[in-house]
Length: 460
Image 1 (cartoon, helix red, strand yellow):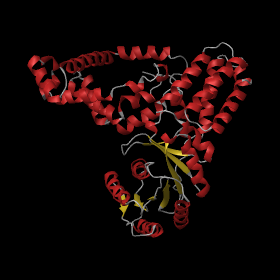
Image 2 (tube, one colour; image 1 turned 90 degrees about the vertical axis):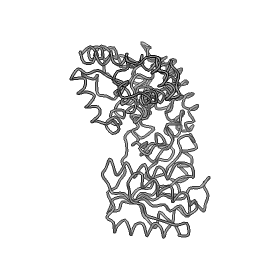
Image 3 (cartoon, helix red, strand yellow; image 1 turned 180 degrees about the vertical axis):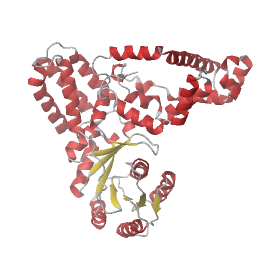
């Protein structure tokens, strides 16, 4: 996410972080690089101008001149201003209304609105323990109604049926009536999208808004459209009393222009960010965490929260118990780890949130071959349970059979076995405490403060 922006900003800030003193000249030089990075990231020009002015004002003032480490203080200012541009703190959905709390979803066609309705329904049901009903008022795209019905079943929420012969306002009124009858906490209303903003579309959604009087009106916008996302959001904001924005497809956006422009251009907070096609790939938008990721400092808090949600705790405890009893780390365990990693979005997603990734060569995270992990899993699946438990027993004929079954080469299998051996050694060190000592050493190397945003160095 936002790889090219991270690359450019990290490069610009690296040049200044080692300076013993900051002068107007080297601050100007660094700001020129930052300005160029933001413009290339398709951030709206007024936002860039305002951002640069605020950073410059703070950098040449008392904040930096009194600092023991002026270069680091400058980076801290840039981070704080990035957070300010995106809204400082996460703004939660306001659902404090007489049930059902109505949430109206608006946006252009193709932004991922219908999928976002299902993702939000799942998040409200699982994280906030709300009973949710969804309804489609899109009478122009018959597939939208069927799509929402399928997604509602997938996430386990109520679906209110509608038909293209009905008026959107009639659908909405009937859905509200049914939601009250069923004692539903939240009603999510999907609306029709268009390929461009037009008067007819705005009139229709304005009438729907007056009919429903929703407590939340969210604008769903594709992050990959850059500053156009902010322009579109502004047009909707002028026509509708929006309460927030949902950025979709952020996992495919290497620039970050939308995330950095929407709040300032519209005055509306980004409440959620879509990080993939999977139904669980919707996260609350935390400006401080996103700023940290943009600057290559990682996002440890989100990584921990994701692990808590997606890692199978019983399997993790079983593996830990196995080590305590002195049993080895076999290929069954290795496969479990690969599956857990896949549940968390794959290695690239994990690396994106890991502190210190900004120090890697440019584009390193993007070069991670996710297919390699699928090949590993296919190889292990082609083994018998006995072979997984005792990979040392693999001879030439067994290896050939496994490769034929998994559609891989002998060198792929040998590479897997080598990596498994390395993990076995690491697990033995973990048991003896050597790994903990090694991690302590790494913690010391990071310097004071530990991981950014993690409240100090970890204790082992």
